[in-house]
Length: 544
Image 1 (cartoon, helix red, strand yellow):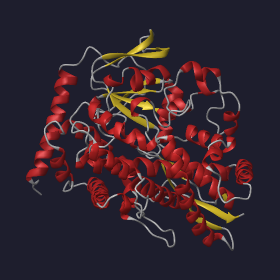
Image 2 (cartoon, helix red, strand yellow):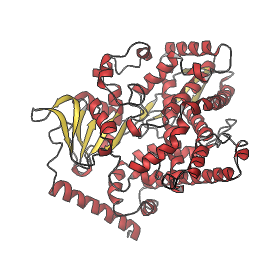
Image 3 (cartoon, helix red, strand yellow):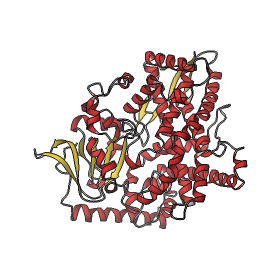
Image 4 (cartoon, helix red, strand yellow):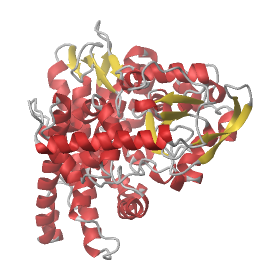
């Protein structure tokens, strides 16, 4: 079957990328290289270690690399390219903070995330990123979060009521992850967009929510495409790439475009509604969900009064919504699911946390903001779960030039020499293993791989402070660090604490006889067994 002209052009663009790679990396290689850095052998020049890195259980491979080679190792990508794995504290600090301008997310006009999400906070670089962050910072302040607390409580109690209807008479097995996804979607909808997706009265699924849930699992299945799209963006525009990918003869690629298009379409529809409400003035906004205090209303107002140099385009505003919902929903819902799973695995810890919550409530239906954030065991459970089971385990950066990356501890090269810095050739993909830092035994102790909330109730190992881990959240890298750290990490913490305080006071969670499998993707997600493709996590729930 003959290829259509657009597909042929796309294939030709990939051919150009491969030829350029041969010219730059094979025929005219840089004097900088990673050949002396220890790492696992690759058995495929075409894919390198990509099969292992794209596997649904790739977190086991990351752990194997960390256990075998330590905090620095060299891997192979497609076409014999080099990848550098790091979890060394000083290297992380250099990449994320000290020399952040030398390690952008991309050095090409675009990449897969920018193509699928648009120019939002997650995908933009340099001045554009700083401009977007400046407009968004105020809505993630502590003062604004206090306003969100009552809203989060209201939604959590609706969820509690809906679940109670199912388990009031006797314990039931329910999809806890599904409920957590609905909960965080509604919290983000109301607090983020001033929009309600769910009344929790009946079982429902929202096309937008389903797209958000499937984004990272679908993206993980086309990982190889992500290596070629940055190079293709040098010769073809994003709009043209998107048009071609909608017709590309690969099911998962077309699925990815369907997910992306649904997110962009719904984002645009909601933004249009929001702008119409803003034109009617503040009085009209007070009668809408969020009362005009939601993130997008505040952002749109700020954008209306911003200077031309700081104003966001319509494309950027739409992308902000997609990024906000995607980054906030999947990460928090799956972190909540993981927390409830580990509490089901540790009934004594669950009972201890429930007792703390009930004591703090003192007969009241909720715990106010000031007391909720200070509950020591609730905070310890959240921190420990996020430490050991970070929803996002790997983030990537590109080396913008040939440079040396300093290390906190020397490593021994393949030639036997000790190295206190590693050479990084320009264009090298640097893989920052956030989870590797979170469970590094040299920093956290011999019990680093154990879930122990009590570690947060006493002084942490002195080595952690000396290491200067650049995480924005205590000594944990789960929310990254530096100027590109998760802008909503306090928002996510508050969501988790409110939901847990409401649900654990009302229900007891137990494991079923079915295995829960956590799968690797941009955001880790659960399935019931390794062979299942359905995102879900079943627990036995009973009223207390």
